[in-house]
Image (cartoon, rainbow, N blue to C red; front, side, top):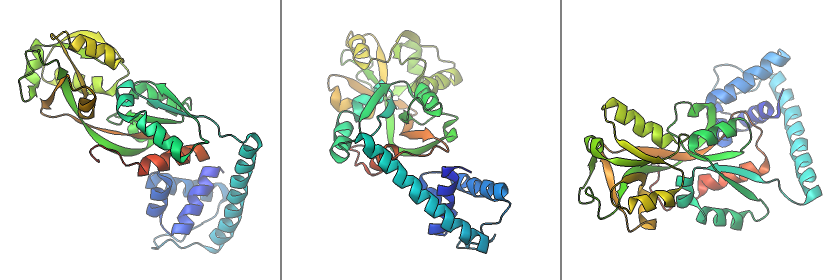
Length: 295
């Protein structure tokens, strides 16, 4: 028996619905159903009547709910008391790719601090692939990442915004007057790419491979301003998001043909008991008014 199993069960009891419980907890419906089945198997008891809508507790389920609710209340109170001993919150470790940090921070950081001034944030810059790996091993609490990964369903997640990828060039570049960048055009291009732990690289690499396109890769870097210095030489280009354009007005952004959109969101480890700091940040991000295109 785990705290998460009890929390999932009690939330399903209170909302009378697996679907509503999953939505409130920011997890999938199968995760809630599995937690309930595991409790039933462990204690050899039936907690809900099957095939009834809304959910209806058995007699044993009602007794279990009363005890589980009391246990969770005591656990939450213990957590609050322990935190008050130090009068500070633990640091919330957040992973974010450098290409996204220029869009989201420092505005988002300042807004979170204004709402939760006692919760310290510690920002770590990693590519999306690496950030997700560190979230799984609990070296990071939450990742703000490109969600176009094949195994993203192994993490809990909330999509936030949808971004279009653009090919960024200097106004003096030979492609700058084009309206779009056709994929075949990249056969003759010198490209700047992100480091190997970038989902963006994987998406572009698959497109190039499918079309048998072999561009010249000049450099792989995670530093946007280093890439911009190369771009302004006029002979090469790199890939950034549409919401980077207002920050770099001295660049030309060409949409790809066909266009390439990605989903940006936050992720955290499946089945993890959410500390108060994590829950605050997840709730904050879910309600944050992004000045970008909504998903």
